[in-house]
Length: 243
Ligand code: GLP
Image (cartoon, rainbow, N blue to C red; front, top):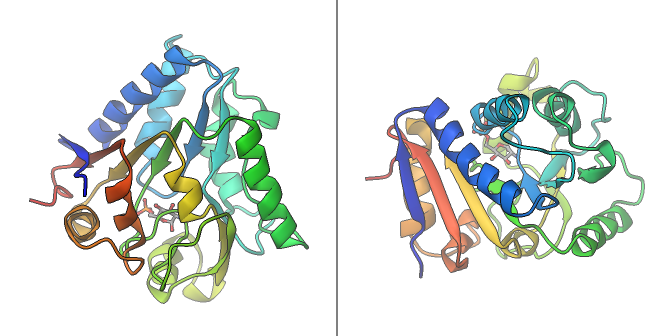
């Protein structure tokens, strides 16, 4: 078992800045790097910081490629709660990344299996993910890999756990409107990234952070597999620090 490198920041804004430092270094080292990107509230301060850094000339996104973790099933890209909209509004439309260099699994594909295979192939063609950004769900999900009896390998369709629907209903008018399924990179896709950066903020993430990195490795806590990844950095705020 490996314990992650863990960096404790004062607050979510500082988490965003420290994470942005790591992304800045990566992009300077490899201008056409492949970033694995995540949605949720946690990465928002990071995304604002990245936008500010490109505006001030510190980062250049014009050659960067990105592959997102997941998308809700049934939401069209222009739906305001789709992860496509999330990425466009919070990051892509403010930076110089080229739309053709950003991929997100489709939530409306008629042939989901073929779409998932194409998604994996595209990431492989790009040479794999250099840095994968992750948040974490209260049940230990990463992307939308929910607790189950195995670690799913590749990009696939999943049924969302009740806890996830409950947590994500804040973005919709009611829990009924939250899609019940999603398409997500698999645990194998995530584990294949060369470097992983997990962000966690708020006291409600403390317990799951502890279970993930200091508990048993089990598909019932999908993120716990990260104990077997050789290069994981966790950046959390004081409220989420698990000790
Ligand atoms: C969603 C996303 C995850 C994210 C999680 C936590 O379910 N699919 O990628 O990590 O929510 O979100 P938040 O950062 O808002 O707590």
